[in-house]
Length: 136
Length: 392
Image (cartoon, rainbow over all chains, first blue to last red; front, side):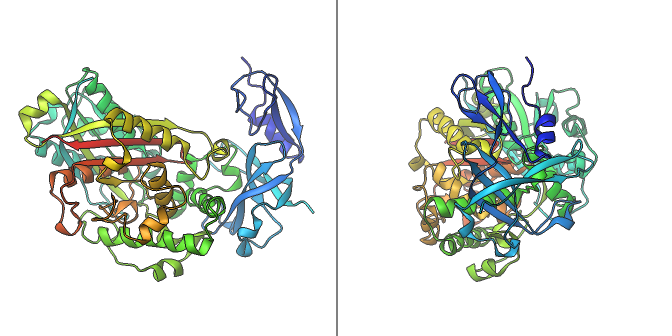
C-alpha cells in the first residue's frame, strides 16, 4: 500500500508556501501533518488537498535555550495553530518580538508562510516548517 | 497471571556530569539490588533495561548486553527499552508481565543514563528527538518548549490567569526541593522559595529555570520475582498489583485532549482497573514532574484533583506528606534528578523504600501501603503507570 502524501512531497510544497493535507474519502476529515490513515476514522482512503494555511493560535512559547547547532535562532516563537479546516499544526510565528509574546496571542488569526531548517547530522536532510504571521 | 514481587532495589546517587560509565552506574545499582534480594547474578533469567541516549552520550549502543555480561549475567536475554523518559518504567512493566505470565521466575529490570554528561546543548538536541523529527523539530521544538506550550494552554483552557498559575507552578518546585533536601540520593539539594523560582532564568516562556528538572546521570535496578520465589527470600515483598502503558503521536495529534495527556489517562485506568483500586486508595505517588506544569497536569489526569484545580491543592499543602496524597516525597525529577533511562526505576525504588518504612524520617510517608508511579516520555508519546502494594 503506497503512502499517499510523503514528507518529501509535503516539504517541497511547503517550501512554495503551499500547505498540503489529506481529505478522507470516507468521513471527510482533513489530516495534516500527513499520515498513512485518516486521523479521525483511520481509513487509508484519502486524497491530497491544498489547505488555506489560515487558522488561529491555540498556544505558544518563546524559546530562549537552543538545541545544539541552532544557537543563532534564539529567541524564537513556536505556536500550535488550529487551522480553519480543523487540524492543529505546529510552526513558528513572526510579527511579534519574541520577548513580548504573551497570552494575547491566543486566539489571534494567522496566515502561513514557511522557513527552512537546513538540517544537522541527525536530521536526514533539511525540512521546512510553517511560519505563521497575523492574518490582517 | 501470577503475582509479581519486588524483592530488591538499588540506585546510585543521581548527579550532574560525572565520570562513571552507563554500565558502571547500572552495575553498582544492580549489585545493591541483588544483595538486598539475597540473589546472585546467576539467578537472573532476563534483563529489562531502560536507556535512551547512550548512543549519543557515550557512543554506546546495545548497552543492555554489555551490562548483563558485566555483572555476571552473560547469556541471559537482555532487552533495551526506549520510551524517552518512560524507558525504565516500560522495562519494569514488561518484566512484570513476563513473570506474571509464568515465562520467567526471576528478572532484573532498571535503567541507566548520562544525560548530564552530554552537556546542555547536546542534551537539548537529543531530548528533542522525542518529538516528531519531521513535523515538529524543524520548528525548533525542545522538551521544555513542549511543556511551555502546555502551560499557556492550561492557563487559557481553565481560565486561570497566568501569574496565578506560575505561582502554583513555583510551589510545586518549592515542595519538591524541600523533600529532596532529605534525600541523600538527590541531585539538587537546596531550598528555594516561590520568589526565587519566579526570578530565575526564562527557559521557554512561561517556564523558568526552577520550573525545570535537571539533566542527570544515574542508574537504578529492581529485582522482580514470582510470589512463590519472593516468599522464600523476604518477609517484605512489595507486589506490583497494577500496570498500564499507552502511546500517542505528536502534540498536534492530541488536539482533542490537550492540555490533558490522553496516553496517561488510558495508562492510569489500566493500572487502576488491574489493581481494583481508585485514586483515593493511593498513599503516595512518584509522578512525572519533568517541569512543574507537568505535575499539575499529571495529578489531575491520575484522578487526584479536579482538572484546573491541582495547583490550589499544592498551595494548600494537600500534595505534601501528611496531606491528601503525598506527591513526589523523593523530591521528584525536580530535586532527585532525571537520568531519563533510569528514572522510572528510581520512582519504584522510592515507592518500595517508602512502603518498607526505610525512608529518612523527614520525608517518610507514615504507614504507606499503596504507592503509584507515573512516567511520561516525549510529547506524552509514552506513558507508563505502576501500582505497588505492601505484601505484609
